[in-house]
Image (tube, rainbow, N blue to C red):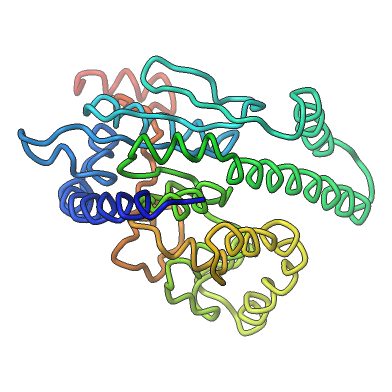
Length: 327
C-alpha cells in the first residue's frame, strides 16, 4: 500500500537525516542529557536550521520512563514530537511537550492490567522453581502474543499509515526491545534511531554486526565476570542455547511480518541492522567492556538527576567535628 511517492520522499528524508545526524552525533557524545538531541538529529546544527519532525515509538514501562527525558530534550531544541502508543498502556500519557497519537489494540485495559499484576505477584510466590519457570513462560507467551497482534494491527492500519506517511517525519526514535517501531520505520522508509538498554536473544549484537566473542564477553544474566575459567567460558557459550525456545515465541514471528509488509524476504535482524544510530543506556563503568561499532553510542546515566557532591564523609561525630574547619 506504500506508494512510490512515499518511498521517494522517505529516501530523500533518509539521506538528509543521516548526514545531519552524523554531524551532530560527533559533537554531542561528550555532553549529558540536555544535548542528547545532538546524538539523534543535526537539525539544530546551525542557526539556519529548522526543527525536524520526530516520530517516537516507545516500549511500555521503564523503557518509556527512560526515554521521556530524551524526548523532552528534543522538544526543547525545537523539534516537533509525535509519540505513537497503543491506546491501552500504563505509563505513556499525554504531556505538554509532545503530541500523543494512539492506535487501537486487540485487548482491553483490564486484561492488560491483570496480566501485569499477575507477573508482579508471581515474584513473591514461594513455589518450586520449575513451577515458577513454566508459569512465567506461559505469561511471557501470552504477553508476546498480545504485543505481536497489536503490532500487526498497527502496520495494517491503512488510515494511520497514510497519516504517518503524509506527516513526513525525519526520524523514528524507538526502543527495539519491542521491534514494532523498527518495522514501522523500515515500512515508512524513515531513518531509525534506537534507544535501548539491551535486546534479549542478542538481537542487538546481531543487528549491529558487532564482534561478540564468547570467550571474553560475559553473557547477560550468566553472572560470569570478564575473567572466566574454562568451564565458565563453556557455560558462556552454551547459555544462549537455553534461550532458543524463549526467543522463538518472543521474536520469531516478526521476521515473517516484516517480509509480509515489505514484500520481500527479510529477517528481523536485517530490519534492526538498518538503524542509523544505536543509543545504549549503558556505561563501561557498570558493564564489562566489549567491542562496539561506529554507530553505537553509550549514554548510561542520562536518567540520573544531578546531585551535589558530599561535603564530608563522617564515620563518627568526633571525626565530623575535627574536619569541620575544612568545610
